[in-house]
Length: 261
Ligand code: NAD
Image (cartoon, rainbow, N blue to C red):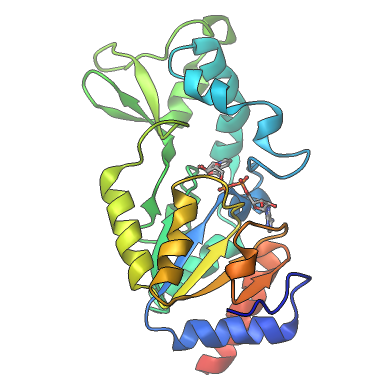
């Protein structure tokens, strides 16, 4: 497959992306943390602003056993997720799903913004940080309320269930943990079925989510990558639109509207 560009995106590439979307039979989108940076939530690997500057994968694995680390991370990310609103790119994807142009949305994100933007059933590979779950009674609670009630002097204590007193955990997949089985199986099936697979805002460095574009390619899909920095799969993509996601998606959507009217 020829790579058309790894530089800045062009109007020609916007038109081609819109054409491919409109004419696809089964377009699938995979999003990563990059789609939510313009909503104010830091990603992992953007230079300077990424979360890796304050949390390492090994801290992430200790998160449920070391309560100090747990609260350090929740305090850093929680308020940003609570305050964040879906941006235009989340909304455009929801719109494209409603128009039946995008048939499936897979996300690595845990911020709940796709759902809040109106996407009916995003396949969430890494869980949802807007909810806490009790390990004893399996009750689910709004993370916002739990975070607001927490006092910094209780940093060494686990958050507890308001119903039964059991330990609360965030409903997210940590490094080294298995993905939710159903979401993973469905994501693989959708990727293999796709004729157009678009990756938006992912470094494609986290496995196994980064295998999904390869499943799509194996079954003949065209791959488009929208990201502001290079990824390992750029060479395999039909097109790489290197730019800010909201700007690119607004242009693609405008072009789709032109084609449709
Ligand atoms: P990543 O941080 O590894 O990569 C994000 C990519 O998006 C980077 O290549 C970056 O250059 C690009 N990017 C950032 N902002 C952009 C913008 N406005 N326009 C264009 N490109 C932009 O993220 P990942 O690939 O999703 O994988 C990391 C893991 O991070 C996932 O497991 C995810 O669960 C977790 N995470 C999620 C959130 C969230 O839910 N919002 C936030 C941080 C981390």
